[in-house]
Amino acid sequence: MRVWSGIALCALLFIVNAKAESCDFNTLVKCFIEVLDDWAWTLFELKSNVVTITEDKCVHLRELEKCVSDRGENVHGCTHEEILDASRTVSDLLTHRKHSGTFLTSYYLLNFACSTKGQAMLADNRECLTNERIGEMTMSAATYLTDKFIDNGKLTTDEMCHELNYKLAEYQDALNPMCEGRAAEIMCESLLGLFKGVHSKRLSGCQFHQCGPKASSGEEVIPPVDGEELDNEITAAQNGVDDPDKASGQSAVSVATALLMVALSLVTIGRP
Image (cartoon, rainbow, N blue to C red; front, side):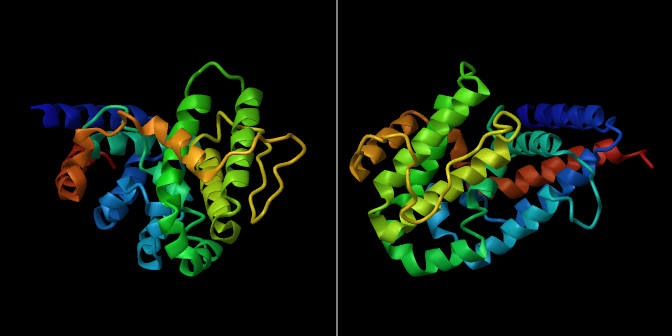
């Protein structure tokens, strides 16, 4: 009953959203489903994916990019915010939880890792980056920074930009000694991808910290922080975050995807 209630709600959302003149939510969601059905769902939740992702998995991410950039077989004409809204609806149904976020969080985090530069960097430094737990630290930092500075609702855009840049510079200084500076670069670039992708509306106009090996932290003096202290800070945000419901894993994806397709078909029946 709970599942079918979810389907009914999902269908209702599509009916409402289908009224938008320029955005074809049905086409957009179908595009998402086709990619997610083939893309290993566990990668979406794997805490080390920024470091472990390989070229064969990046193929699926590039297919997802076609949905986001509206370069699929059928044009959906949706804005960036409408794309994020649709991805949250799909994520809620696939995880069987409300307000579960968006699978596009991992998409934006992984964009740099799947770039030509990112893949070359990982190929040369993967063992070091894995040993230093940079993948887990990047995912934890994403949660920590989002919760503390973006979703708390108390900061202005200027304050958010300042705090995020300060933390990026702090992390850069702490990680520069690791893996010849590549640890700092891949974390910084991945986090910027997340900020600019998922939170672009709230962070509009931000001038972000520049990433790069041995990048300067700028004019502001950053107190020294070692890697262990940094790890303790950003992983503190993970305490109590793990949810048993997220253990549905890949086995539940095909079922949920099939249910979502049923909901979508209910909406399209009788439509030209």
